[in-house]
Structures are given as structure tokens and as C-alpha cells.
Length: 277
Image (cartoon, rainbow, N blue to C red; front, side, top):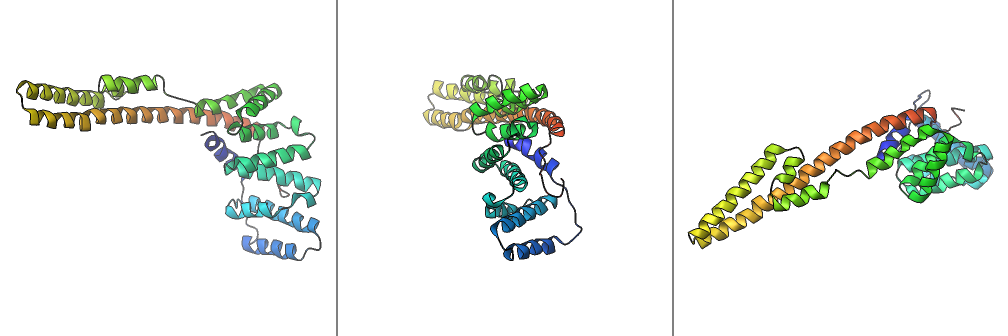
């Protein structure tokens, strides 16, 4: 849930589109230049430029991840290296590849002595670690709030991720003892009353058959009560409770998205390419 809230916002802010020249033609030119380059530094510089072009064209297909794997960052100049590390961090975070995202976040931090003062980077690092290492994420959050108190809105991410409907277990347990009650208190009274009524009628029919020693009918009603109405009541309660929890979670996620959108407008996490310097 955390990543789904932020990744869409992040990519929405990152992408733009230009079509001055045929994309295929430009990419072929990059490949031609790559294979005719005279040294490793030039070849890897061309690969970074090619990745920049993909990003500028909003080409976020699987191909761009293949291009990332081709780059040998040790041959890059400092500016190219920082740009590559940043974009790789954003791309792998959006892909939910936490291991690779953290690798490039750490690489960017090691290559940039000023990263601790870069609020945008600190937000990216927090988002990357939030679903991987909550201890580090907690430390990063404190640092972010110290830099800008508006970063407190990031707590909504964990609130959404950890949200559970109030008295959820109690509502489910109550349905075992009084069929329909869990469904009623969760906001579906008609379904709950119907479930309760069916179970009461089935129980009454069982009592009647027992009183009149209709044992075959008793067995039939017993199986019907347990197999359909009683267990059906439990499944219905759990379904209604889960639906309400998901609905509430979506409401919280929408509110959280608005808060994060405002923060990212102040500290954008857009792709850093040679085209937007």
C-alpha cells in the first residue's frame, strides 16, 4: 500500500513527452555511437544519455531496466554518475524492487557529499527504506521533520499500511456466538438480520424435529444449519468486515495521497536527465 500511494505520484511528476524525432531512430543512433565508441568512459556515458532519452520520452517500459543493467558506473563522470544513481533509485522504487532501489540510494549518498542536506533525496531514501527497514526509516523520518516539519505528513503512509478496522476480531468472534451480529454492527443491518433469521429458523426446525423424534429430518436440518446458514453467516461477516476495512483504507489512502502530493510539489523527486538541467 505504501508504494502504491507514492509510486504513482512520483512517476506522474517525473514524466514528460517530446517527439521531435522518431524515437526508434534516436535509439538506433545511440546504439551506433555506443558500439563505435573508443573507450569505456564514452560507451557508458552514451548509455546514460540513452536512459535519459527514454525518461524524457516517458518510455518506462522493461527496456529501460535492461539499459540500467548495462551501465558500469565506475566509468562515469561525477555528474553522470549522480544522475544515473538518482534515476535508477526512482525507477527501482517505482518497480518495488527494494534491494536494487536501496543499492542505488546508498550509491548516490556515497557519491554526493551534500546528500544529507538534500531534502528531496532524504524523502526518496525514506520512501525506499520504509517498507524494507522500519528502524532506519524511523531515523530518517526524524531527520526529515527536523529539516521541514511538513514532512510529518509522511506518517500517513504507515497509518494506511497498518490500518485495521476497529474491533475487527471482536465483530468476527461475535458472529460465531450470535449469527448476523457482526454483519449488523459493521453497517449491513438487512443482511445481518436476514442471516440471523435464517439461523434462528433452522435452529427452531431442529428443535421441532428432535421433539417429534424425526431423526432423519434432525440430521438433515443439522447439516443444513451448519453447512449453509451458520458457516455462511461467518463468511458473510468476514466479507462485510473486510469490505468496510478496505473502503476505509481507500479513504485514508486518498487523504494521504493529497498530503504527499503537496510535499512532493515542494521537494520534487523527478528524473534528473541531461535534457532538464
